[in-house]
Length: 266
Length: 334
Image (cartoon, rainbow over all chains, first blue to last red; front, side, top):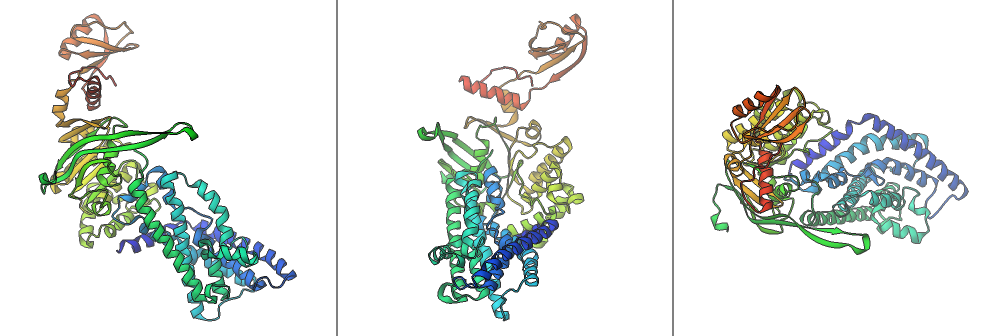
């Protein structure tokens, strides 16, 4: 099974070749982080507390979000798989003696790791320099945040993998992206922290898988009691449940797709 | 059916067929129509053969290739490749065969060729020493040395193709399936690849099944050709046999010094006129016909076109379509 680590390393190296894009990404994320933070600071200076969030929590979540945007890829980029299904190049992928989902998972986690280390971390550092962020006090807490980020990356992959698998039936997944590209960021707590919505709405959104890519990691970093079970362990359990459930669904749909569906192109 | 299975049978297909369901018509009045892409193919390929799988576009070649490699499930029939049912055990089969689709690549676009080749070692679990030895051999034979460190996106088509072939062969597969391996390549690259395939076949006994539109590939490589037309098998045998089944006449192309009406010469029939150039279908010895033409007209230039496989195959299709197996000496001056 050493093929998957090898694919992971190659995914990492592949994205490391785009250096200018990485620097541009850090700049974009930092600028958007500052704008969002300024808006929330204005809001919280009028109302110091909303549903258990104060100014520090909200600004911290803005930078967790900006640091994770590229890693979990809620707004894209799509996996190359979609284009390969559309053109039939997926035939080549299916001719490898490896699992289709395992291959793409390994590759995407390589990408996510590169993105977290070289794009997310610098963005978050910019946030800590410019604003007064709420940060974990112990190394153990930081370690749990890292686990949460890893689970978020797996969920981010699994969601995108499912969107692209739909391409086996509908051929072009741009329509799906048009919908989830809009709903995903809202449900993830990217547009606004979910705590700012009415409790009934945020309760529903929190239970959906998108929340586990941004909102839950942010609450884990903040150590919020709004997490499932009121603890970090509950938050991690929710994330792990989504990661496992979505991957199982992905594996099942893959087997249906490759048995029933036609690889395009001559 | 399985009782005829011998250890050296590489591909065994009996009554293989694949239907597709098409939806047509306007959105709310769609009708479903079933089309057979491949019908009732019987094919046995034994170890060490090189088989050319020919047919016009849309004949069912790619559908057959997809079924053989397990990425398309047959609708009917029995299929075993290396003793395995491809669509059920696709991943297991993939570990034992090598596949190259000429128009696609398995290499990683952004990374040096060396990285993709190194990855195949993990993918097929080849021991490091074996991998190094085979890679050294293939690097020398296919002259990969100068561009092993180049990102795949910067390779020329010929270089990329050689890279893809290497990736397909590094694990020493017993069966190599090639879909148009020389498409778009220049003469030198084609020749390198052909010589290499012959060598792999002779030295390692690699069984090769290839589809191609390139006559040179067929003539240089294939001991045996299988012709498929409209989903059914039209011919299975050697190349000479195929030519004999459908004799296609040679064509004499004459450039006269001035445009002239269609020539009427004994032993030849004019099939096409384009300014001073005329195409004569030869029924007689070319020298005799050339003499007769030269007696009446001044000739600027001439060539004799040998019947090519494409022409032979085309006549075979026409014969089959008309319900007469042979001979139908209609020309294909292309």
